Image (cartoon, rainbow over all chains, first blue to last red):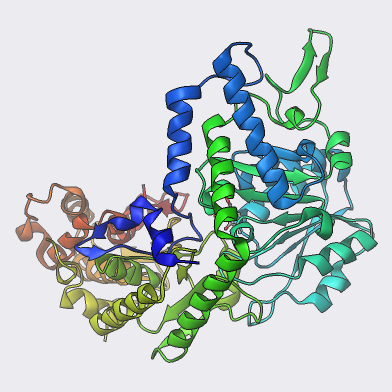
Length: 404
Length: 151
Ligand SMILES: Cc1ncc(COP(=O)(O)O)c(C=O)c1O
């Protein structure tokens, strides 16, 4: 894998910020987009734009074909059993809300339990809280240890016949932890619970085979996978999706409508009411093809090299405390520096051209666990280099000096 | 170009390291909580306002970045012994300073030491850090029931 060549594919990386080369280390928030994704979206609007599934004219047929081609690309990437299991959404957040509403309302009742973990993103907490409020079910939380790893011993204890669904993040955006979802899924299935995996972070870093995992629902967002914002996917088992009531009503999700009765469309259209983000979906497909052209294994090994290098630097940086030191983690270096608030770090680093995230990372319970209001987070993608990590640490040294 | 030094002036660094009037005030006549949902800054301000509408004592506690801590420290220093009417005038002047055009020089006569925070307007994502304590104090004085949030 040639990083310099990859960097050439990302036009945004070729710029300076405050007179310094841009060092983009906020990839867990969103990744940058390669030229091929930008071109695909642009080509769609310049040449093929039309509404899908509802026209007999050429443009509509082209747009529909491109949209459905993207579905097949995404099915193959996640090894879903069929394109009927691939539902396009606005992103991870909407995918989770879809399940919490459509599946949750039909299957969860008073006395039932939803089991999530302490390291979930707010998008895998709040929809379940809302479901519990609606139904009288209760929300249970699997604790974690100081390294930021799930307490699997306590997971096993919390799991019971009352557990209707386990919601777990595949890779934590705040800590980088990769969770043992295979074992979680097996244990959950043993008590009859369904499992939803939040793959917003993981899907661009580790290979995901939904059939091998036997996962019931897998949710992710295109924009963290080098694709457009505002589009994502819910992959669900066909039998479960087929039995679920629809999420939203409207066009495209119906077969026939009269004022007496509406017949719903078949999967996956039943869950895609209204005109979707057509350009976004097509761009998502292009992004997946781009990842495949580089190779996920090569990307993962490059990124592991970056994380190891950054972790060594972090280990010897005076005053730095890493937040999240799981044995199995990827791409995220979250930390606090004594005497310098993360927001001040964010501003000072920006002046050095270095973009990081400072804040609670939409995971306030994680901040509460470590008793910090916020952390600074550098997160890596395929186009980052060791030079950029050097730039990060020299900028951090400047910040430390300002507050010394 | 506006430099980091303009934002992180020594006064700000000092107030961040050793915030004045830090801690809870018991008893107090007014208090309020403020949040900046963007970054998770949390602030609690406490006041004693006497019958003549004079701020007799004032303090704050909470967690935030250097700008929000220094701003609260400077604000509490500036307001001790002043009237509620003067608070209103300072609030307006501070708000204007933090959000006005770059060319618009701060009104140092009214603002005094608070003018060191004028650098924030060059850092749009940090303006709220400086103004949170002022909004929180305003809701304390107005006895607003809901916690203040940055607008
Ligand atoms: C772990 C995790 N889950 C869920 C989300 C939500 O993704 P989106 O905002 O694309 O819906 C994110 C992204 O911020 C995330 O990192």
